[in-house]
Length: 195
Image (tube, rainbow, N blue to C red; front, side, top):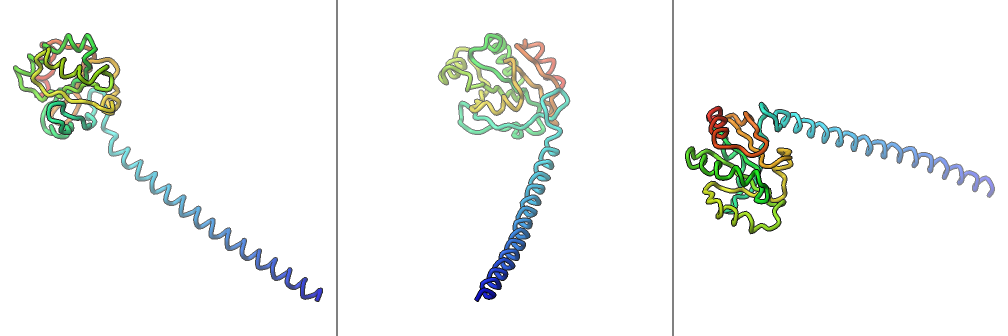
């Protein structure tokens, strides 16, 4: 009987050792599969980053695409909607004195040239969303005003002072950046370079 118990214990120990050994192999296979999946995901992310490598916010960089809402129509507007055309991209807010100072010149320039003026209001910074339509009416603005609802576009373009204006040529390359208010002559001069 004693030999049977010892034999049973030995069989159980050998069985347990085999179970542990095969279990470890299974865990190793799972970890290897997870590592392979993570490596593949990292390679995909690296490929995406390389694809965006040419985009930035400096003169000479490709202008990053964005999507904002047109205040008047409620439709989404993207920079890529203007592919092959020159664009003036202006970031502003109603409470900003330099923005207020440049708006009459911006309106006159738009009327004179009918340029693709993407006027992006930083709506998240406004005390009231009603200020934007009131501002448009008080300045008699006829160009489309776009709303950056979650400030994603401002973050993409790393907007610090406002107004900030980007002149983007037909190839989508940033040719000039104006930090602060611009006058009509500067707008006309820089627009000539991207026409």
